[in-house]
Amino acid sequence: MADRLFDRPLSVRHNESVTVQICSVRDALDFLEEKILGRQDRGYEVLVQDCHDVLEYRKPIRALYDAFLRLALHEDLLVDPASTILWMRGKRRGRGSSSP
Image: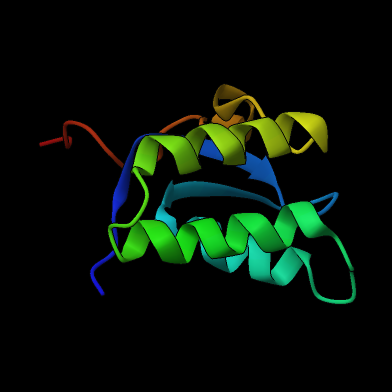
């Protein structure tokens, strides 16, 4: 089964200090399977099955994206992507033109 990419990635909170970017159905599936460990949550289980259905072309990828987005909003997991990259910005050291 080939992975299928979302049109737009989603940044979600994995835990208090880790944010992950969900770019594909496999990313969503991995995230959901980690989240449901030890939980008996029907919503997560349905989304896991939806991931498998999308990978097997039984459901449209847009439906999965929308359902995953609703779950992320409901569980307060959605993160603004601009805020996750700020730590990467900074002064460039040792780059640019070299002195003769």
